[in-house]
Image (cartoon, rainbow, N blue to C red):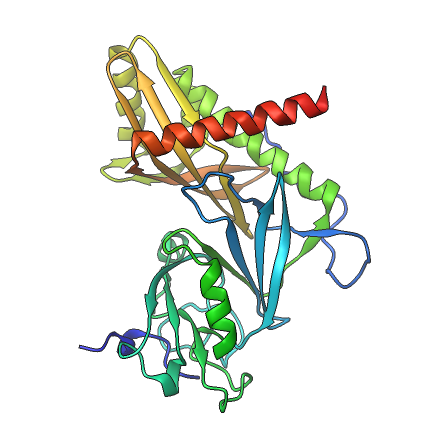
Length: 335
């Protein structure tokens, strides 16, 4: 059974800290000073995750690859791209629009799984529709990053996929860690100054740390204030989640929560945070990958879903040691 039939056929605290900046984001072309992509705030140093992020600007028809560079990010490469033949954000099946949001590259496809005349030499699937899309009842599937033969124009429009040249997809493959490399797709990517970028990153880092501290201190009411009324986790809604945390508080004498340096990426009012988490109490210890989904609510964010997947203790310990080393070096440099 050929799987290409489903693909894109060719064509720190609870105090609000997220008020919009007085100066709006600027286009990368409007000023010569160094600029940073507003939605890409932090690429984790943790080796378990990808060190690269793909950023697609539909208006400019460009795909850029960014990587972490110490505590900052930098652009590595940029290539022209084709997108859906119809403009706008994808909302339903067969609307020939490219979706806009935070996605991950999940599976690598080559011949004979995909026909060369439709997809070129290589394709990568995405997780569209993602959690945010499903909340908005968006439909459709088979949104890929793929190539086309050199004989095909890169401007004729796809049925929703992000499309690049054959030689480019082979180069991009070197930057992809399956299930870990994000591809952020925007109608237009805004860029901000280094100072503004750092301000936004710090605000979200404080938000995450405030959530962690309230959890670790078992301040249930403050902890729950970080969550949306429509919060869901596997087997829980907000009411049962609060009851679950209160029950654990009655059983455990203490808990400790350590988070590795996280990914922090945004798409308009959507926020995704991905981190390695070490949880410890007097009765239980576990290690895993924590993914937090949140949406803008007034001047702050509210968590709508959490996901956790186990990860080996050795890998988490190594990641924590590296994070602690990075923090110590940064502290010494600022003293």
